[in-house]
Length: 311
Length: 291
Image 1 (cartoon, rainbow over the protein chains, first blue to last red):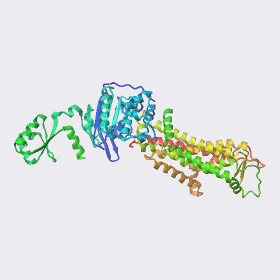
Image 2 (image 1 turned 30 degrees about the vertical axis):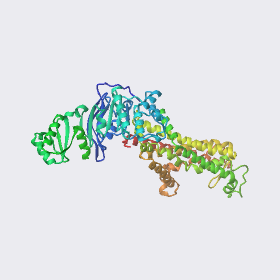
Image 3 (image 1 turned 135 degrees about the vertical axis):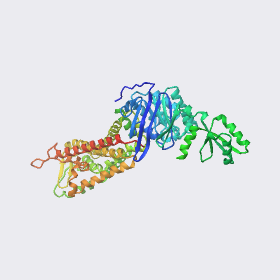
Image 4 (image 1 turned 60 degrees about the horizontal axis):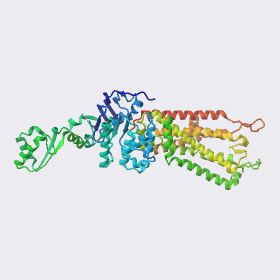
């Protein structure tokens, strides 16, 4: 049942073309296309209910797309499901596990369904990797949400897959746990050359690890690009908080900053280079405006927050 | 496939719920055996009160073979409900738990998983039946001893020599396994339609009760569909204990009165099993896994 599996490293590991998914009248995913290259960490961002998990389920053939095509390792997931999934490890949303089995038993169970035999040492190593070796013989019913999440990640990793799909992997984790998972993702991509597709509703989680980011909203692609470029410090948005916004606005216009002004109801926002911020502050203070604060936001973060707050 | 069956069996037997059925059967059988051991003669006298004036029976009427027959009559109606506890939870239980998506993202197809789950559930059912046979037949033979099997039917009596009885029980238990596997496959079908555990269990039990009532009612309208209902055929294990007689009205050793009836019942039950399992596979293959 398993086909011979090989693919060119230079080709896209994931290639999604115009996929849509309708649930009755609800369009959960709307004409979405993207590509993920080998060895990349790909950040898939969107607020809750934006269509992230539906997309991931389609990547894993848990949900049949209404239209469009999905290729993993250059092959259609629908036609080559078995050989493709042999190379994929995934966790989807919640870490749902068997409460009556131990951590080790879970890994043994999921190692057993793989074509290539998974050595016992791999199970021990994977549990160490996710920081669960001290609870390996405990039943899952005694685990916290964070520990279940770690075990879910271990299940995704135990058969040493080339592509790892992690849907909200830091859900339920404490700050240390989040940092651990972040390090693990970076290690997997950098040291082991794996492709990691990670979804989250928090930009702060993704921006530190992802090479490429895609933002999805109401099933549609909003932004896609290289993280470094999207988070360019020269494209920052500045929010000015003053005691008298009307007067402050007239000074901003008079000072030649009008070209940077953004139309926002909730305050004064400008999109201007970081170097121009002190000049603007100086002119406001000199004009007698009490500046309560100047907050700089990355344009992507701002954009993402806008989407989230408008929802 | 064997790996998947092993996994499914492992999961079944690691769940405490699995042992409820084994415990319930043991408790029921032990209670009935205890009652009959203490007050069995009175029970036998009650059974034979109508024929005591016309017939004298030598030997031990209340022996292990009769006890087993009584137990099967009582329990084979209720065991399907215990089978439904596991079978109807095989897919929906995992959907409810959220683990179904873990299984379906492995390299094995959904069809493989569904078949493996059905085989595992069937093995559980067969084990339950073996447990029932062990306690109802062998334990009763040990406690009550053996003798000829004397059965009171509605308008006649059947007397089977003790050396002619054991193989009939083997046949009856094999037949019963088909009946219970039909229940297993029905539970399985219900399980494929739902994402929670309770609905399919209650649904399976309700379907069994509903169709059993239809099979039992003697209303001309229902008589048309009766031959096609699995519940009509589930209790035909009793046919193994109806024996042919010669012209002197003597029992013919090793004979069964109505073999075609047994064959028809086995065929109807097998068709139901195939139908239910195939429907489950089709439903699961088309289903979006959203849980």
